[in-house]
Image (cartoon, one colour):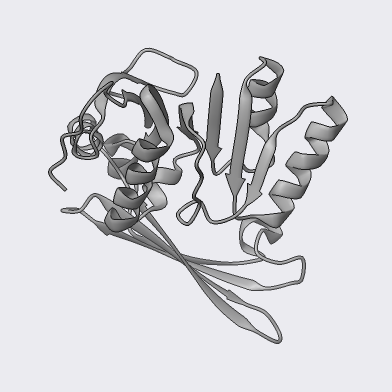
Length: 219
């Protein structure tokens, strides 16, 4: 089986899949993650094809039986970017191939409140090994089911601002998005391990297939 992991990070899933004798490709824009993943594969004696690249720009002539995108990466993409990535998935999959991805559900969205906080070394030095002040402002957009975490990081010699947008999905909205991309939805789960779907879960996983023939899209 040939599998592509979009946003593979340090190889948490690619390593496990390769150990199951799959032919695995990993794509990630983090040079550190790809370096770590390659070293881990070498230590295990595994042959895994890694690409240090923005997966929105990734292209290949290869065809895959399965494409995965895990850790809710799909939520961080804009509508245009989600269309781009679904078009790529459809093109890269073999007829009858599957895509598996997870997203934040509306339960997570409903639990979020708009807020503004600041803290010295916010998130325990996540943003810098040096001392800094971190300001976090959370915005919530009800009609779009989108949240924004705006991080302002103030150090002695620099100031930086980061915007973390996240789309949240209901089961029907996610189903429609995959169907517009030409896929047939197979099933929903509460996590990527296959836990039965629950309306109360904070996240959900969808499995969809590329039809054996044809494509129907309303994009």
